[in-house]
Image 1 (cartoon, rainbow, N blue to C red):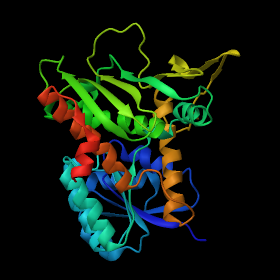
Image 2 (tube, one colour):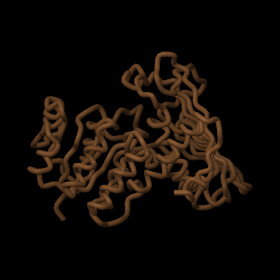
Image 3 (tube, helix red, strand yellow):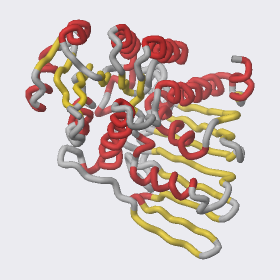
Length: 348
């Protein structure tokens, strides 16, 4: 089969990594880039030998024969670009978070459903090699039935120095990082029946929250899962940015993803450990291998779906369940109350 032809919407910071990751897959070809500042699109196109650029997304969709679009713009522009693509009957991949509100995300999913085109979400965190290894052991029954777990993404990394615009977001860590971490929790343990969240603002010069703690009851076994997130920029004994750390207790043992991708399994038979390191690509920053290599795996999964070979893990419909947790967490923090998701979903 000829490669699938696609266009990128957006030529910002992450576009270079998205496009480099697509080039690792031989079954696709980027033929056009849209960006409202055309000079940025031209620069990215020159770097990656993409033949055409546009300052108008509708013009791109009228002129180009493409099989899908990959939207890599700011969250406030996602809705208009998804609706535009749906109008042209073009399948869509969209960056996370899908939308700034849950109702808007629902409208985007509904528009693509009515147009009969796939809407996929680029949720790459669950595709990190060490997290996939945890999932495989857990699903294989290595520690029996899980009853308690902790998922940590806590860093002293100065994120606001690299991305100062994040200071202006009225909602920060739960939408930016929580979409990843809560999706990983769903990937490992299933759906949520209840949730309680507490947030904090450590940086005095930001608008949103930079610390969040979310406790959930999850899955058929009602596993208690604690998700801890922070960009407090404080000194830490274990600074492993951007690694996610996981500890799971089951009725037959425990499983830990420790720093430096150290995966430890403890059962009655004893303890074993192995290092589950991510792949490295020449275009990736070695310090970010665990994140940037996961982009390739996420792309590959969505490409299989767009080619009709399989279903994607991170569809728009599935991502709505993660976004429901994000906004329920904000609701819980504001009320200082636990939120019963089962009751909400029954009412809906």
